[in-house]
Length: 154
Image 1 (cartoon, rainbow, N blue to C red):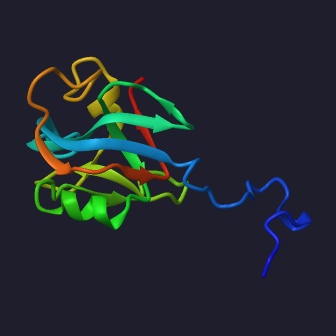
Image 2: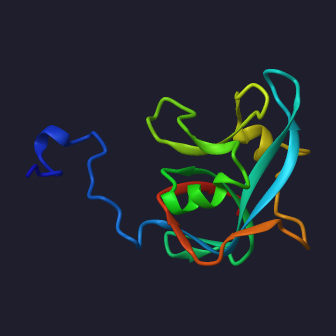
């Protein structure tokens, strides 16, 4: 068994695996919101999806409001299975060179990955800001889910 604190691993981000207290918790019910966006590659209108959590508990702190959650890293099989039929274009991919697999939207026509920046972070984007009052979309999970990491509005 190797020692994660050995001298050869110093400075390489070595640390023990996160326990449940270090992980992010998406509070149920968890919804799937659907919208449309123009694909950057083929210019066709494509469906895009966002996970909406009733709350996010990150590092033990609650945001105490519902929020869009995106860029979920290494999503659980339970979450990806819940999304499989309702959002087949929201699937696991490696969007950057960091080696982390994340849930990302893809164009239904050409398969190109749709950047979260253009879907969540820019004014006028389909999922910019907080989810609106009223209907949030289909409930995909009725219990909390732990995730390694994700982005969300505060």
